[in-house]
Structures are given as structure tokens and as C-alpha cells.
Image (cartoon, rainbow, N blue to C red; front, side, top):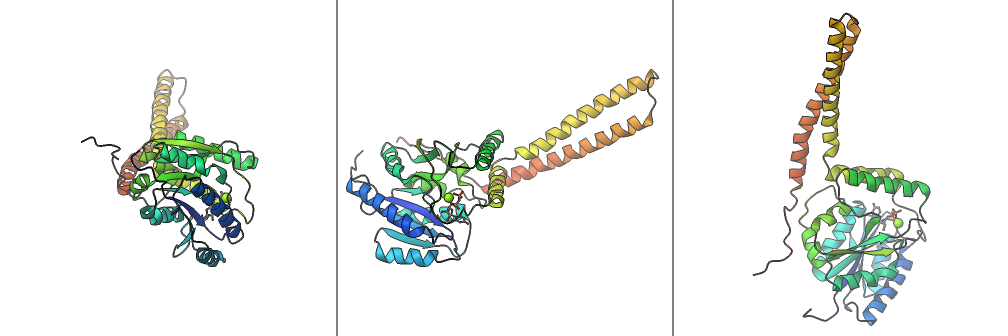
Length: 318
Ligand code: UDP
Ligand code: MG
């Protein structure tokens, strides 16, 4: 490394109706950042950026007050509520020009801030992306644990590359942030996009606490929508499943028809209802197959409209 001076870290925290937690969160984060500055791990220009995602409560008033009382805190206000993922991206893209690395985390401090130093150390070891991964899931209800695990399995089955038990607690270097900007998609599912950026990456393990105040902004309905978006934004496999089903049914009805013909010829079976039934199957399967094929083209067009970068160059030796 040529430049040994500590680098600038920005924490990016999306906030939606978080008035109950903000003061405590700001106090804990300021203390943590101060200690990292003291130990020379990060630059004294490092900051904590709260992103107000169109909150309906006093969130923005609190952020404004924190900003005027504390040099380390800055505030970013979205024009309206755009959801966690968009608020996060908005924050990251806003701080990108001011920092060397950014770590995203939730306002409720469920993600253990004790490991922030580990993220930064991995950055100095050359990682452009560091994923925070939950080591245990004991603070979750059985239901949440079960749905989360099924979600990861389903995503993998559909061919989406995501990191197990990693939410949105992660470090991105300035370079990774610049590349992230080139992903133009509107349906944002950052957990699926970040692995596509590539570069050297690593994981930091931590235990997730309970929310210390306020309530979850992710009710079941939002969670299901999020999971569904995650799958359909990254995979056209569901469409291919329709074609496969059509194909299999078509083969089955052809076999059934042949058996029926043989039985008919040797005089064992003469029932016309069997013939009618097989025709219904055959027509149904042809329709499924046709929908699947049309779907393939729509799927291709869909992926094209995302205009994702086709490659990202890591090194160019001149
Ligand atoms: N959040 C947001 N916009 C929303 C919903 C949530 O910015 O529309 C923020 C919220 O303030 C928190 C983070 O996203 O900082 C995660 O939300 P929450 O803690 O409620 O989710 P959970 O941890 O229960 O999954
Ligand atoms: Mg939370």
C-alpha cells in the first residue's frame, strides 16, 4: 500500500418511522466511530449518514437536530417513502463521492456494531465487498427462521447467487459503489446484485440482537413481496418450469394415446371417453408449452431491459 493514511468510512442507515430509536442509535454509533478514529483505523472525516425514507413521524426532525449537534452526523432526505432497498441505494450513491468505503446497517442496531472494525480491517486487506453474516438465528421466531431458510433455498434453486444469512449489513468500497451504479434496474434487490459485482470479498460473522425499540417495518406482506421480487428480478426459471410442465404432459398424453390405440386395436378397450380425456390432456399441454415459449421471449426481453453491465474489469496491466 502506498497511502498509509486512514480511509474515510461512511455508515449509511435507512430510516422509516424510527423516532424511538434514532437518539440511542446515534449515540452508540458516534461512540463506536470515535473509538475507531482514535485507534487510527478510520479517518476523522468519517461520518454517519441517516437516510430518511419519507417517514411520517418525527424522524427527519430528529436527524436535523442530530446533524446540528454532532459534526459526524449527516442527513439525507428522500422526497417520499421508496422502501428500504431504494433508500439504501439512494444513501450509498449520495455518499459515494465523499468516502473510501461505506457500511450499510439498519437504524434499530439489530446488527451488532461491535464488528464494524472487522469490516474495515477486511477492506484494508483488499476486499471491495464484505458481507455481514448472521452466525446464529436464535433471536428469530421459528416462523421467521423457517421462512428465511426456505427463501435462501428457493433462491439458490432458481439459480440466484446470494449469500446465506446475509441481509443488508455490508461494506462496499468506493470502487464497488461505482460499479453498483451501473446496475440500472428499477426492481432493486441488493442482496442479489452485490455478488454480481464480483471483486475480492469476504464475510464477517455476527449475532443479531432484538430490536431495542419501535417495531419491525417489514410485516409478513412486505416480506413475501420482497422474496417474490427477489426471485422474479433475477430468474426466468419459473417461465421455463411452465414449458417443462407442458413438455412432460405432452409426452405423457402421447404415451397414453399409444396405449389406448393398442388396447383399442386388440379390442380390450373401446371407450370413447378415454380418447376424449387424452385429447384434453394433449391440448392442455400444447397450450402450456406455447405459453412457456412466449414466456421465454418475454423473459429474454425482460433481462435485456435491465441493461446490466456485461462485464466489470478488475485489473488492467498496461
Ligand atoms: N426501512 C426503510 N424504508 C421502509 C421500511 C424500512 O428505510 O419502507 C428501514 C428501517 O427504518 C430499518 C431497516 O429498513 O432501518 C430495516 O427495517 P426493520 O428493522 O423494520 O426490518 P426487520 O429488521 O424487522 O426485518
Ligand atoms: Mg430490524
